[in-house]
Length: 322
Length: 273
Image (cartoon, each protein chain N blue to C red):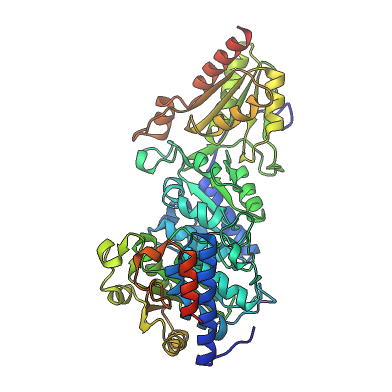
């Protein structure tokens, strides 16, 4: 992004909404696009596609394992299938199918897990996916995307559709702050530097990218120059951009709405440990299941907010200077 | 390959496939001979009589497709594909060796003319239904055949798929249950009884045909009936004998996952002469 970009972070559509509209739009252009859902189309927003193209929409009922392998079969006839459900269900109940029937033979299936993270709110932990990025990254050959806002998701769906190979896309339930202009030209092979900075780098993904932007403003008021990077593509990871940031700022924070042990943070740490080690701090869900509550209340309580990111940045800087 | 509906010719091919299965698993010193031998007539009739396919053009758009969901019976599929001309016959006995295209379970990375990589039980029916749905969208008249093990249908996903297939009227899919009554730990009835099996499939909305899976005529007749059944998918419940064709392997749970010894191979080949 241009260095002088100001982020107002106005509320935009939820990334699940952006997915639903994007896949319906794509369906108009390309008859190969088909969609499968497991009785959650009104929540995953595949309902837009279902209404427009009932013959290309496959309602699978509450049976995610069948849905994943069925989608693989559709792909094997040259279709471009998007299978969707809550991430907590499709990635766990469908995981073995994703492993053996999709990843192993490299079937061209696109999986969209919605309602990821703890920000789904009131429904509670049984519906919250806090391990999906890790599971998806454990599927060799999968491309794993975690878009932060509406524009990103819209572009990511189109890009994923024509990428030859399996893709997992992570979507959220709640409205997401707008980071990118609607006409932004994404290069999904690159992590995006949103804000220039020299003292520390804040690496975010999904909803936490906006929190990193807010944290950088908080740190700026203290005279700390924080770089902000949005990682859209979790796998393959843009190690070059991250290593450059580690080298130039010497301290890193990774923030995600995911189990802190096994998500983006661990991938970044592994990549930097073998290239440009730097003091690192991690923001994420800490070895627990959350609870019911408002999305905002949960993000506050589980320390997935800008103040927690800023505090982590100060710790990382202290270690760099210590 | 020369396609044929002649029962004697098909019986001759079936015998040759049995010989390959014995030789392959014997040479590999591992593998699953019993459940391969039980499926021989069904696979033979599909590849030589029923299915539209061309070994010289394996990705032919309007081909019929076969998925071996019970992937551990790979030897029967490899033997049939080799005899059809998809893959070399002379290397069949490299089964399960490092670098062999004849992997322990079917693997499309090694044999691209295979329709699917299988081995984790329970998934092939869903795959077949997905292919069937895709073919219907294209207005294709091709058919999809998927072979399930009897033990395999203890998997819950099979019944998710069974519901889907009937509900969405995927009548271009024909499943075959190789009902040889044995699984790894023993007799199916002692591990997890499936009966009343035909009633179960009927209750799930499928057209059910029960048959003797070793009678070539019965298998031919069943596939013809399946192709004529419209509005619902068909399942063939093929009553078979595990280890069929080799006297000391028949109905013996040992030969689910244990190959014949060198002496047993010789004995078996004499019986299959």
